[in-house]
Image 1 (cartoon, rainbow, N blue to C red):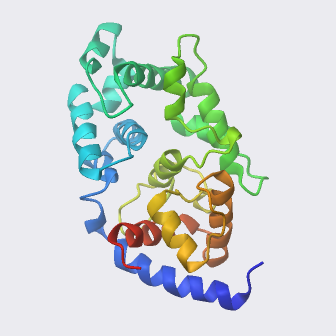
Image 2: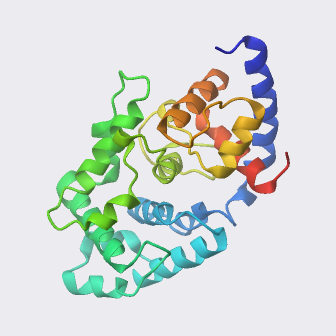
Length: 261
């Protein structure tokens, strides 16, 4: 249990760091810069999802690989996914980012195409899976998305690891980051606010940087970066800002990357 004084201390710390890091300059060196190259909704969605998928490791390497992937789609990722014939997917052959390789990107792009054609696109899939009655209804949305995304007889077993399985307790950092990009509307212009899901229901992306800072200030006590930790952290952030708790991802991640504590 937390008391009002502890919550106030968290709020003062996080609000100050939020103001420090949540500025347009944040975009340039962050993976969110890749979908920011585009204007059309489908372009932003596809670029955002694929970039978030490979967002682990060195950020410069992430940005370079994501930019290369966009080039393979003629820098029109939405149009590519919506209209690509089987022969068009050959442009993706040879793409590799760490363990995300050609076989994975081919499945991901064809699965995205199927979701747009058969299921109305990723926003509709996440919205249909969202449970507004649950405390953490976004968990259901993520699970529903993953189930449909891999609902194909030819999905390679190795490819499944690239969408975290929250039903098995995964933190799903990259999916939660992608959802933050799509759902949050903010005056800083970093996140896009394209989707009609409640920002208050988002789950805070959790990685080594944000987790370290969260534990040092006491807003997260669980030792492991798993779903239970995400829910604990998000629950405490909601005490500070119920309508937009994951805006403090900027504070936690920014502080962690810049090693200010």
